[in-house]
Length: 418
Image 1: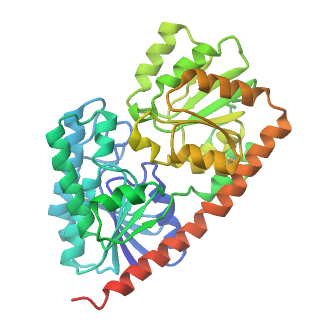
Image 2 (image 1 turned 45 degrees about the vertical axis):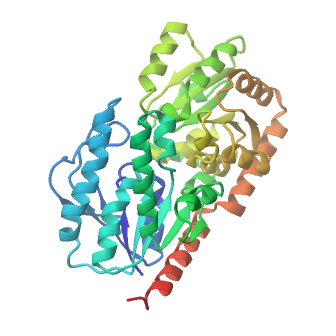
Image 3 (image 1 turned 30 degrees about the vertical axis):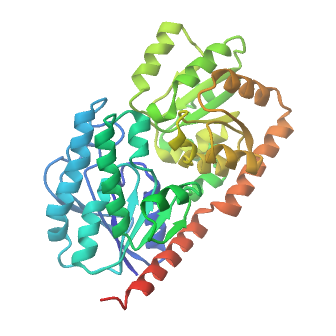
């Protein structure tokens, strides 16, 4: 099978789709990627790349075609809008030229925000007369309103009509959460919709050799915040959607328990705000360690007393399963989920930890204290439960095989159409 993947985000940015492509290639699938210039989450174009110009390269056996992209910057709505629109326009203008000599069986879109990135894929699928499969990671326009990026009701309504049109162009819609099915169906009543969840790279499900991991990553010195006490690890984007103020509030409530330390890995739009809050409040039990290689995360998670996931108290986020939930399940450590809906349901169903309502700092502090006070055998059992649930429902290699079944089926259904 020959797949054209269209995604605004791709390696060296850290997104789930990287692992999917690597495994597809290992299974003998030819994958070409149309993407932009890497700039997430810092907002600046990565070293070794330029915003202008088109480039080609090979990564993990996949051919990558990169189009010009306006960097998103930080805390700027207009720059973010230009970032989104620049990929759409560059994909429409340069994509057909870069891919003019290549033929594919299917066009596949990996679609976290913005869903607008599907527009070049729609055009490419049309001119190459190939089926289009869209993997929906985020619900627009709801998420735009929830994160505050767009507040104008008329603009949100217009975006809703664009999303409806994008969905109508897809031959198959894959959705990352079971709760997405009904929401997407409202905008795409006549299109096939299938639940297809995220996974994580299989390295998260393996117990890493601590010394080998340190040497391989150049971490010759252990991360001291993970070596004592009861580290509560949060790994991922630090933004509005994650409602990280609840972490600060919970940390303030837990100052009397110095063993409980919040160890935060990642970057995002709220990172500086968190840093300022720690200084203003004099909180010594929160440590912002910034971005680390994704390869280091399995080691980091194994060192955690508990793994923390948070989301804002918005209806849209109750439908979403943050990808870190699968990573945490695979890691086999107790999970504290401060969120509503699907993500919380999975943690409870797996018996892998404790869930509390989104943005409830008192409940979060109480849950962390409860996990801390549990016998080690009980915490170990939570981790075992989580990993078992991951292997049953989210194992990476099995899900990639499932994706290939969906893609082949879509190709078979459309190959005889004019």
